[in-house]
Length: 248
Image 1 (cartoon, rainbow, N blue to C red):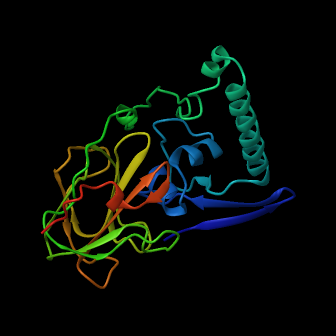
Image 2 (cartoon, rainbow, N blue to C red):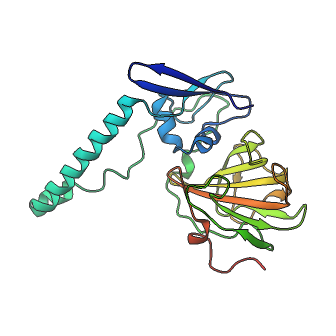
Image 3 (cartoon, rainbow, N blue to C red):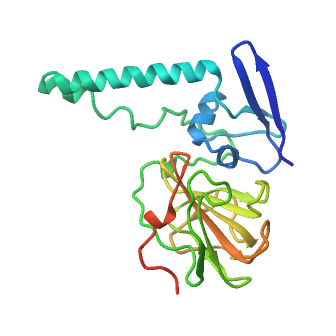
């Protein structure tokens, strides 16, 4: 059951999520459409992002965060303009810093999972099914259509679309049914929804083409795979990333 708490303050409205058993920072961030690093930063949580039942997480920016973000955007724009108009030496000093991930604490508590191994690996993508019919394409800003749907057979094998680590395996996100989320690197996550059976668990390392689930219709009226890719927490069209050759 999804638990959301709204809290009003003098600075505006904060929205909080109460952690339920089986949820992870990745699944909660996915649910609210944020990059997991942003949610971690809002809540002062360091890698490996251990959560506890009943923990309250802020899942929306405060007014102060929005002002800070706007100020940083203005400052970054000014820095870029200065580097372009300055000398060759000053240009080098003004590049490359914005894309670096937030610095994280690498100390790993006992019995926790460290996902940092996948921070910088290069990706080769493959289709998550070997057969099926594309019945829904990506539609931006349209809930339920932030990925692609491939119709297939009940019990058909679903495969990991690239190397990575399972960061969520469960049935806690509304409308997704039995769901797997895989972290591929610091930039990309992929999700596989409506499965009949999950073959991997949180913390499992997977390779591209490895079976991870069986197709089903949990959370759906039809037997299908709903597949999403998110880049820095934002949905992108999987057809722009997957190989051009589609399943038969």
